[in-house]
Each structure stands twice: as C-alpha cells, then as structure tokens.
Image 1 (cartoon, one colour):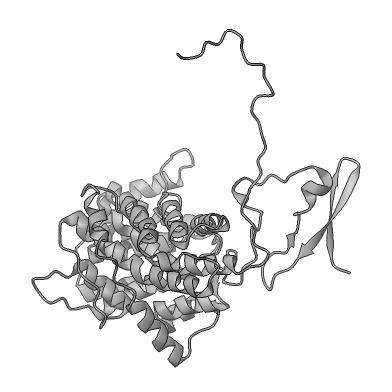
Image 2 (cartoon, one colour):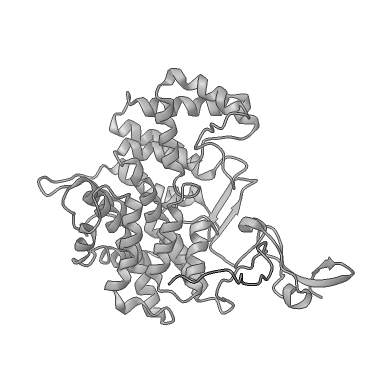
Length: 430
C-alpha cells in the first residue's frame, strides 16, 4: 500500500498520496485537495511547494551540495567544458567523444545571428540597460527562425535549443558593443565557446585579438557554475511560460526578464555597488560594524545565500579561479578589488560571520572576476543569462516532453471586496 498523508479540515480528513524522489524531501500530492475538500493551500513564494518533477538538478542547501544529473558541481567545473555540461543538462548523460565533437560543432555553427537583427539594435538608445536589449532581442529570435517554433516536433525543439545556446552569447556581445559604439564582431568558428564570446566582446576590426587562456577557462567555469539552479524564479518563469505552449524564444525572453530582477540575477551587480559605496579599505571596519547592527539597514552583499546554509559550493570553485585571473592579468592595485579581498579575509575569520555561516558566495567572486576583466557592472546579469540558457532550455525540454505537464495556473486567496451594487449616482463619461 502506498504511503499517504492525512489532512484534516474541520471534522473531515482527506488522504493525500506521498511522493518520494531519489534525494531530498518527500512531497504530499495535494492535486485532488480542492476537488475533495473545496480548499486550496496557501504558500507565498512557493517555499514549500514542488511545481514539477525534474531529474536535472539537485540542491541540498544544508550540506552545500549542487549536482547536475548526479555529478557534483566542483567536479564538472574542473573536468568539463561548458558545452559538455550543456549536453549533460539537455540529454542526461555526459557526451562520448563522438557526441562531444558533434555537439560542439553544431553549437558553433549556430552562433551567427540573422543580419537584420542589427537593425533591431539600432532602435534602442545607446544608454539602454543591457538586459532591456536582451529581453527584446531574445524574444525577436522567434520572428527570424520560423522553422523551430513547433514545440511538438522533436527536431524543431532540438533545433531551437541549438540556436538559443549558440546565439544568446552573440546577442550578449552585440548588446555590449552597441552600448559602447563599437562595430559588432562576427563569431569566430575556430575558437571555443568561451573564447569566441571573449572575441565578440573585446576584439575590434583594427587588430588581431588573442584570447587569454586563463580568462577563457574562467569564463567557461563561470558559465558552468551558473548553468542551472533547480526551480529558481527565472527557470520557473520559463516553465510557466512554456506550459501555455509559447514558442521557446518567447519563453527564454521571459526568463531573461525574470533574471533581471535585483533579487535574482542582479546580486553580483549589487556586490560591486556595495564595494563602491565602501570606497576604501580604511572604511571596511565601519561597514562591518553596520552589518552587525540589526537596526542598521545596511547589508553586506555577496555573503551567505538563501538556499545554501553552509558554504556555497560554487564559491569554493570560484575562489581559486578568481585568484588565477587576478594573477594572470597582473592586477595588484585596483581599489575595489583590494576592498573585496579584505572583506573576504574578514568574513572567513570573523567569529560573527563564521558562526552565522555568512561566507562569500558565487556572486561575490563572479562580480570580482567580471570587474577584473573590464566587463561593466550593468553587463553582469547578461553574463548570468548566457550561462543560464543551458539550464533554461534543458528545463523547458523536460517540461514539454513530460506527459503530465499542464498549463500553470496558481490559485489565490482573495481578499478584495464582496459583491457590490453599482452606484446609481455614477455618471458615464460622454
């Protein structure tokens, strides 16, 4: 007999089936609760609600665990490329050498975007926030690629996935180039995924650009670490949009819009803003004191994590990578980076931070690396979107292929006015 949970409402009890995953908390299947009892459940922010079954990513925040398809994130970051991890997320297994060569070649030859997209960019003011441009340009892909919009055709779904992983870095680089008034750089098919992105970001037609291998590997690791993170706000947005049957490009544009929120993808940008507010190493004690004062609204950004109650496993990888990048670029006297390194030292030694497990998280180190590479603060979330594309398309594909999938329709607890009579004294506008 299957295990059940009993929910008692008044003098009536209802038996709800239990579901158990391979790891993590069990769930109570309440899908029949309203039909049987006439009641909904209330769960603001869906903190105790599983909206889907997924076999892609597993997180244990208490133990500091993040796994893609069963593989620990630090192992993947050390032994794989971003495209290897993308393949793993999409297809469920690491690629064989033949599959790896095919997938790399396929993504590489989908990096170029339709030439007319440059005219779309010209319609934006140069001062536009890069994420505003990304929302528009990612959504616009559906206007150019009509042969990959049928979500019920497996070959078209796969083609859309290849296009999104290939083209979104190109759109991100074009967004940066447009903002600074430089010409767009076409993809270079001889380069790696990360190397090609750096080329499109920082090369210009006047001189040959040489990719720094340390920086190239750092970008690849950053993309791996941000590729997926279970049912976060933007991934849930992609799934919810996709549940209506919307085309995949529209779904990812919705994900980009959700990621733009400062509570989600803007955290590493907030880290740099905080460092600029501190301004100098000599002022760090003042801000540390403020951070410890529960009556002061100031908070140290980039420390602790809503999900991870221990050390963020992604931060463990990036801490070493951050130092490799700074050493490779010969950066020693950059004031904001000096502040960041001192803050890190204090957080790892100060009893207040250690006791509360307020360790530097992935956003802290990624912000420092992007700053060191000369990537503007307002481009940080674009970098996040490029990486998270792999997870979004994998989650979208899993949802579309799930026979139990239904259109998302959250319920509400209505607290508005009761039925009212329309006022007889109301005058219509002529």
